[in-house]
Length: 344
Image 1 (cartoon, rainbow, N blue to C red):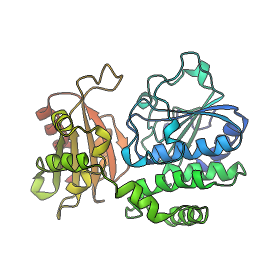
Image 2 (cartoon, rainbow, N blue to C red):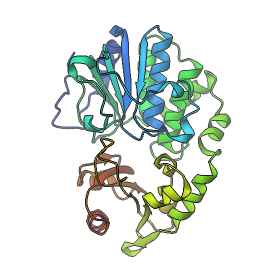
Image 3 (cartoon, one colour):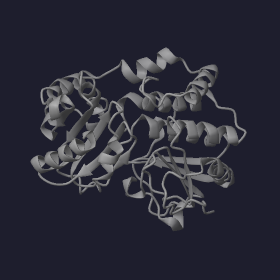
Image 4 (cartoon, helix red, strand yellow):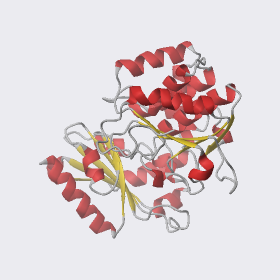
């Protein structure tokens, strides 16, 4: 099965209405399905993948969810999160492989099977900068979260959204709308959220799990990271730095840094926030792209996806990221120059 938009030259012309039925058909026909996402997952890709895994399991499918890295601490409570595997057998075969919110094939884990063993590759995304690496590319840049796509696939299969799947979809939408605070919040996401509550989701319970049960070590790490705060470009650019030494001293992991950048963006007058995460010394050994991991957040005036794209990354207008190799001072200088260009 080949999507009509494979190798699309215009990444904005995704034709989601045409590709939703193809994604539905790929999962309906498959007996064994692999769900995966980009490395170091966040709530959107994890929630959207787990939602589909729950639904497919309920439909009697054999499902496997794979990611080689630690799951974000505040989403490990989701149904089936405990079943996510960190490795795959060298001979495992699937009828379909679903990648959620991944951006490009090279961001997936190293053990994702090749074309001869993965079956139909279904790429689910809502970033305009994603690459059409799937046999089916169901990409909808208008969707608030990939969980919205998962919801539409489950409904398209004629299956009732169970409480387990509903929790996962709600978590996905919660993560990418900033608890319905970001500009991505739209009538569609709110209508779906209402249906998820009707399916058994408890909003306060989800809020506590996702936002109000932070490990003490995370707070200690945040204190160290905030001490690196710098404001430049006439007060319009704020940066944070996360070093491996900080992570080691506080006994934390990278997933606990999620959301730190929002503290920098919240400063009055700041248009763009950027966080710089030092590469781990064993990044190459783990199969990760070497270099500083740079995340961007914008208040809306600057399209940070353009900044990220200049360095081989991608994302949304208000949230994006990339990996840049080189000495810290050089990486910072290059990033600052590109942001300055966008600010101008």
